[in-house]
Structures are given as C-alpha cells and as structure tokens.
Image (cartoon, rainbow, N blue to C red; front, side):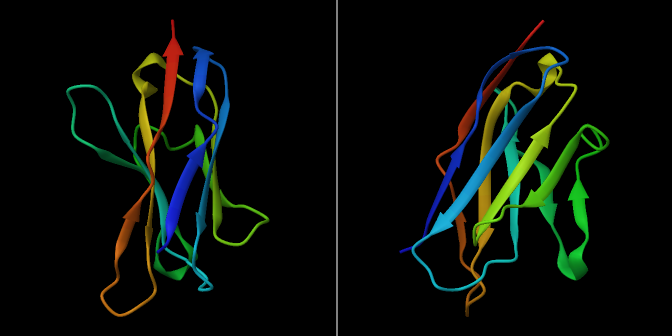
Length: 118
C-alpha cells in the first residue's frame, strides 16, 4: 500500500517562512497528481496548491504570490514553500496524491501542523 508523509510544519512568526515536504512511498509508479490542502479549526478543508494536467499549478487565491509548489529531487516528492506567512494560514496541512491506476485512488497524508503567531 502507498503511504503519504508530510513534514516541515511548526511555529513561526507572522511574516516568516516555512517549507513543507510531502513524500509518497510504497509504489514504483511515478505520481504526477500531488497537492496540498489545509484545514483550520472549525473550517472546511480547502485546496492550497496542486499540480494540474498540462503542467500547470492551481493555487488558492489567498496564497497565490506567497506560496510556491514544486517537485522535490526525490521521486514522488513535492515541496510547498510558504513565504510572508499570516496568522490566517494557521491550519493542519495535508498532502494528497492520486494514483495513476485504474480507479484513480486518492491517498491522504496524516497532516503537519502550521501555526503562525502575530
């Protein structure tokens, strides 16, 4: 079974930066569809940034210009560089992948917590 593991969360002051990492393991396939979502307490889970078909990247309007999604050097890894962090960015951040197989199974990581203090 495939596993998705996030890392890089922590506590940072407003205006600071963090880099989140996501690694998918347990498969020999190359996974193109990977992205980040977040959920703040009492709120719905929302898209942060994700790779789309054709090589484009989708960003939430609230993070575009501050966050950058990129692929890591290791196979099936993605990075989320978060700059100019705001208290409203505080949330649990989840990595999601879609398996390139029949059924297009979605697999979520356990999440990593980001806390931005004012």
